[in-house]
Image 1 (cartoon, rainbow, N blue to C red):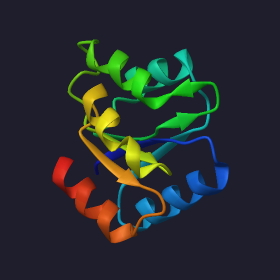
Image 2 (cartoon, rainbow, N blue to C red):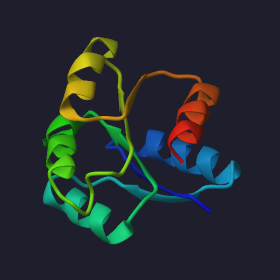
Image 3 (tube, rainbow, N blue to C red):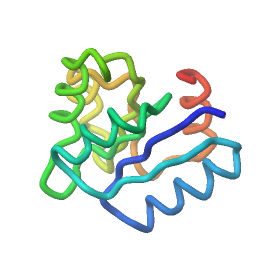
Image 4 (cartoon, helix red, strand yellow):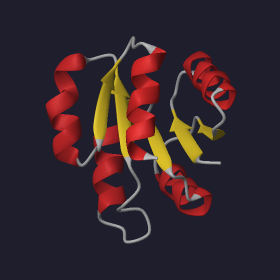
Length: 118
């Protein structure tokens, strides 16, 4: 079973991700925290895929992605960055995200992207 770690600061959105992904058969972990907690959790969780909100309370998903790409333990984890600001796709990809998804999005579109990287 593929493990997906979802990092999102909106608990309602986070719960929706968890329910939908578990229904599709994925092992799902969720995290609401920010900053160093995120990097430590990713290293211990060892997910097959990371779904990362771009704008977290107190953190920028692009900065987190850059840090993850520089660490040998996390550099190869696929990252799908999500944002309510579709005009930020280029900056997300430049930061090292594997893919980008603008909110709101169709769940089938998300599943296609997940299948591509897992």
